[in-house]
Image (cartoon, rainbow, N blue to C red; front, side, top):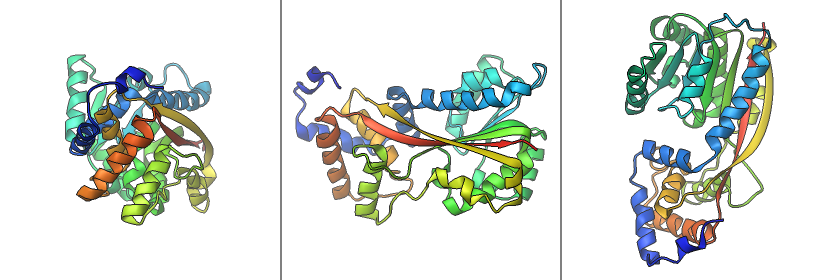
Length: 302
């Protein structure tokens, strides 16, 4: 629970609402960094990733140069972990040039010549096998990867495109053996006061839509593809928490969760209603933002 003293300040309700509305104008990268500051989610992702990697590495020689591609990497809070693992090179791929500039500056400053930043849209570069093969040869070092990660990168890809994307990655970019590790917010939950519950509540009310991106459907979606015979799938789910110490920061996270304005452009009145709801149901009630998220690992064994 939050410190009760944090709620005994002289900040009025109207001032808090103004702070929440102002947070709606914060850049996406600022929203993401705020989420990372107050949540155990990245540690949770890293633990599931390392569990999958440990299983994969049982028969891998210590002399093997392990190569990793992180798609949708942003400025990669798990950068040190991935770099330590990837003695054969780490490629960080994202459409956000400003985020890539941050990690490139760090890699250059630390003389990490095996870290490579690549700007691009995975919806274009990996949309099919031909595109993926071309991207590998011209932009990704022309050598396949032991590990490919997509951590919360599928929000901007329609679920019906996932099989072709995974088919392209596994067929053209992934070594044998190799693995693809994916993480995404759960699309449905019966538990209230979760990020999924919050998203579905307002996306349905104001945009007539709900979260249809169920990562756990992916193995079934790929079952009819020829490459499915070479893959093993493992799935699991977990719950993480976000506990900001300022209402403005909580609202930055909420706008990120609601995909505002990248996907949903709420009106002024709708933003006020959302802000008041979060103020009453989460901030003043002392509730954490709880996120249920799903993990899927594709292991290519032959």
